[in-house]
Length: 246
Image 1 (tube, helix red, strand yellow):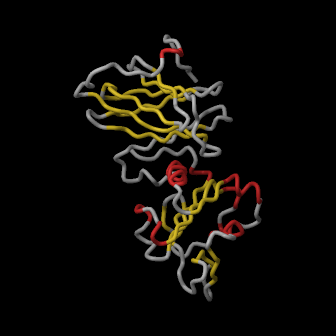
Image 2 (cartoon, one colour; image 1 turned 90 degrees about the horizontal axis):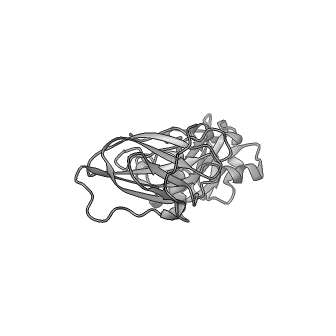
Image 3 (tube, helix red, strand yellow; image 1 turned 30 degrees about the vertical axis):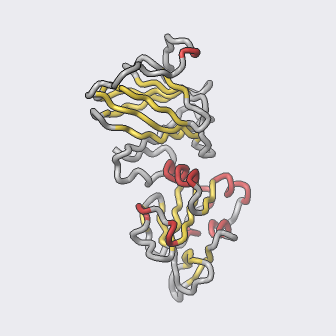
């Protein structure tokens, strides 16, 4: 991949030009995370072609680029010795583009996940999983948790999570709220609601993350089928690196 050629000193910082941004400019704001752990990556270099400055992500992995000329632009991300990532984006005047960038820092090719702030499906991604986990709502199971326990079946990871597996007569065994006789959780697989879904159909090694919510905690984009019981969101590793949004 083409690496970003820097003509500015690393000591130059990430200051913007003083004054109000032009009316036809846009704003780019986001966070860079390690795709394997979801942890923010500090010190990642972010640059938008046609902007004079480069930006380094802070301790929370965030960056903020203002006064970017509207139109089709190229954003470049470089982290340490990993290959650079380039992403083509369409910027609209007066709009802010919010990005969630997941970098597989151990791979040869890095795959970005980019989420448009205005997109209705902004939370329907593994990037949304990490964002919700950072806000502290719900219960979360990561692929590292699964790798540590190495369960034969995915349902074994639900112990202590307020979930039980209920088997219906002549029907599937589905996740249900603990202590309830008949309160099945609304299961979403990679953002898509699946009725009467047996989670043990999914091999544990194929799962990148699981979210579990009680009724009042369910994120609004997944609440339609949850009713008062709650929801379980399962993200597969095939979903890693898939672009979402517009």
